Structures are given as structure tokens and as C-alpha cells.
Amino acid sequence: MTSLPEQLLPSTRRALLHCIATAQSEGRAPSLVAAVQRQGQIAWSGSRSCVDDHAPDTDTQFRIGSITKTFTAVLVLRLRDEGLLNLDDPLEKHLPGTGVGDVTVHQLLGHSAGLAAESPGPWWERTPGALRPELADVLGEQTRMHTPGHRHHYSNPGYTLLGALIEKMRGAGWEQVLQREILEPLGMRRTSSQPQSPHAGGWAVHPWADVMLPEPVEDLGLMAPAGQLWSTTGDLLRFAAFLAEGDDRVLRAASVRQMREPSAPGESGDWEITYGLGLQVLRTDGRTLIGHSGSLPGFLASLWIDIESDVSAVVLTNTTAGVMAGGVAADLVGIVAEAEPRIPEPWRPLPEVDAELLALTGPWYWGTRANILRMTAGGGVELRPMQGGGRGARFIARPDGTWVGLDGYYAGETLRVVRNEDGSVNHLDLGSFVFTREPYDPAAAVPGGVDEGGWRGLEA
Image (cartoon, rainbow, N blue to C red; front, side):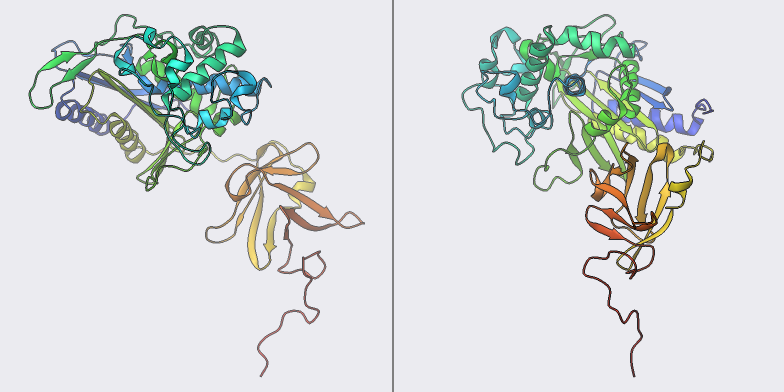
């Protein structure tokens, strides 16, 4: 039984408060609220405000901008899991007449469709969506910036197309589908397309003077699936728990894991952050974070999740610029993960033993390279080099007795046992590579054969 999360140490809580206090002060934000989750429960929350006794809390709504895209991506993956589309389908197959129908659903999800970053015309984030009543108004005349599939190029219109795809296939509005398929199952009652009290107002802070200007709040219309939502730190941490482990009521764990996999080459020279399917993937300070950032005039937001440490953080603030919300959220994760590292679960034996599979465990050799095969839960196996780095992967069992790779070099590849006529094991085959019980075992079917003279020393 997993123990309940312990209260954070006073020193950790002070470090978290110092982090957000510095961000709000130096970033000159009217207000800032943050929260950290550990083991699926909120472990800390804090806020700062320029108005005494009026600081936001975990129930105060802020606009979350492009974090909305992650919700839209989940809705598309649900369509895929239901068999209603394939990610490699061209958009035209399900949403004809857009003029860019040759791009695939996968490319739209990962921002590799080559579409423009923004909508043409007046600044879409500060003007009514009614100015762009049709998809043609969102896309404009110059729709292609790059060859589809060749590079990552962030595109807000691309997620407008995905929202239209969801509406077409569900026969209902994007907001209605979102409410029914994500918000209600996850209990996210404080997430909405329009602000609900209590909510923060959006402000611009003058870059050279300590004065403020209210920002307009517009309904984004067709662009809503790219950045419309309002939410709270409490609701976003519920969403973080879902993104960490999946939830069969919304999206199975395997599909959530797929969202976290890099989907296209990043921008030239940008090796620290990449993009999956509706999720950003950040590598910082030796850890990998998944999540998304968001911004709209008057608001900045960030959600980061460290799967390995089981720590998530949300930062929301009501200023157009000045606070590096993504960096602050990453710092909050790092403070907790480093000061109070995750306590490992107790080791426990497997619930049952497959004797035939157990006999396959132990050393296997790819040529002269030693590898170790281990059993994992659910009839799976793990094959990794005995020493150092190199090619290795986890594999999950298939009904036909083979295994398929889950990660690393062998992701998607098939591992199978090749037997002799008497049923004894000859070798393991992994994507055509032969793994034998002894280095270049002469009794095994080693490609190219094994020299009949066998192993030898240096002759005098």
C-alpha cells in the first residue's frame, strides 16, 4: 500500500515561497499563484499579490493560453483510440475543404505540418473571434511556411484545425466535447472557456515604469482550441495527475505516454526542449519535464510534470510579460525533487512465476556484447547491456508469445524466441539481431557462421 504524501519540510516550503516571491517581485506581476503536487496530492501552494490581503488561491481562475492545446490533443487521441481516425490520416479524409488537407493529424498535433505560426489580420489574441468566422479566415492565403513533416514550427492555426476536426467527428462544439470527455470525468469544475468568479484580471505592466494597463479579454472563436481556457492551480494539478498516469475514463496510459514522445525535429540549435503530441518535453538540470506553457495578453501560465520524481508544479500570473512562468515552474519541481527525493516503493516479488520465461532470464550475447534479460510485471521483459550504456529496451508481451519494444532503440521492434526442433532455445531474435547464450555460440544460428577453429590466443 502506497503511503500518503508527507508534509513538506519547513525549509522546502520556505524555498518554494522564496522562489515565487522573487518571481513576482522581480517580474513585477500584479499577482502570482503556484502549487506543487506530489504523489497525486497538492503538497504546497502559495501566492503573492500587489494588493494586500487579496492574493489568489488554488481556486482562482487565470487564463492558461496554450495549455489549452494539451486538452485538444487529448480529445484527438480519444478519436484515434476509438478507431475513428488514424494519426497518419490526411486531414482531408475527415475535414475536407480546408486547402491544407494533405497534412496529417499527427503533423498538426506535433506542429510539424508547416503551417503559419499565427492567424493573419489583426492580433488574434486581442481581437474578437468574430473577425475570423471561417477556417479560411484563420489560415489566410499563405498557409505553408515549411514542407510538412520536415521540421517543428509552432502553429496556432494548426490547433484550430484540430478543434474543427473534433467538432466534425463528434457532431458537437469543441467546448461541449471538452466538458463531457475531459473536465467532468477528471472533476475539473473550475476550468472553463469563459471566466468564472473568482478570477484574475489581465494586466500589462509598463516596461519602464511601475504602472499598469488592463488587457482586453476576447472570445477567440474558432481559435479557442489553441488557447481559450481559464483554469486554476487546483484543476491543473488534477490534469497533471492524469498526464502522469493516464485515466481509462479519459485516455489510456499508453496513449498518454505516446503524447510525451518527441514527434518532429526541433528548431536548429534548440536541443533542450522538444514537442510531442500536444505536450512540450523539457530537459533541464538532469531531469525530463513534460507539460506546456501558455500566454495570452494579460496572462502567463506553465505546467510541468517530472514523471520520475512524481512532482508537478503549476504557475499562473496575470501579466503580459516579465515573469518567466516556465522557468519558475521548473524551479519549483526541482526544489522539491532535490530537497525531498521520492521514497522508492518497497520491493515486492512478482505475483506469479512463469517458469518458461524465468528460464530465459540472465545473460545473452549480441556478438561479444553481454546483455541481461530480466522479467518484468505482466509477462514483460527488459533487455539491456550488462555494462555501460547502449541499446536496450523494455518489452511487453504479445498474445502470440513474442514481445514488442516500448522504448529506446528497439521501440516497436519484435523480440522472439527461436527454438530448435526439439523445443530447446537456439537464440533470441530482435529485429534480425541474434542474441546467444554464449558469445558467438557455434550451436546457434549466428549470421555469417562461427569459425570452426573456435576461440584462440595469440600464436607464438
